[in-house]
Length: 327
Image 1 (cartoon, rainbow, N blue to C red):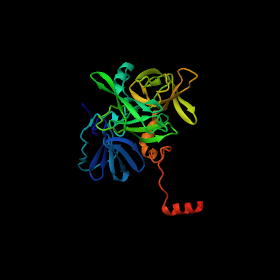
Image 2: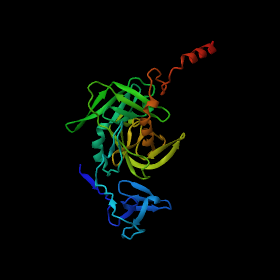
Image 3: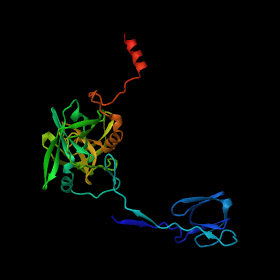
Image 4: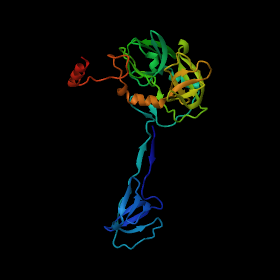
């Protein structure tokens, strides 16, 4: 990737010069002058120089502000700094864009994202989900896996230009937040490949009326794509804010991704109003990022599968006192 070079030379046109009493000089751009100090930008930093150390100030037109004597030693301007183009993605447990990406068509994006959207299956039903890193961690809704211990995930791998499903049956529940309807799972089958994954975007930057689309398994129809717009970003249910969308959401879509037209996940589809059409809802991705960033706080304990939190045993003395009180 080509590098971008930015010159921060302090000897640019109309530079100012501060002559110091020790016959040194500082060259740059004066930002502010106060009664007891002067701030000057020298390119790589801003220096604050006490008035008591200044012999005179030369403005960009080289007109002296006070008298000086003797030759001056000029502090060399910093060399030009080469700034390499940064990676547009934030690396970590999940990947997120740190700059705007161009919009594409749904047709283009579906072919790129197909391997990262999965079907989550349990004995009592199914839902959708999306992979967030190459190690097989994926996000879905809590209600998709609630009360279940046998979970499998169907991933669609690309072979010879075609997406072919492969079912993984060793799936572990890593963390859950049942109050915000989110769950983090991990595929742990042996000899798994490096998985394709999605990029997480931002719901805060969405505009009402902006196009979005969902990929999921409504009514078991895997890899169904539906498209719509953002109806509102602040629909409140039980104290939480949701994205409302005209994108068709049906049972089986739960836990699947809602994408913007740059192919970034902006929400998790999780419910609809059954008595109407085009009234779907998604959890904003900012809440998902918080859940993932603090996943240790939501760690799932197999010893207590009905509860999303891991509790520590009390100290032995306290435990003894509680036992006595119960007798």
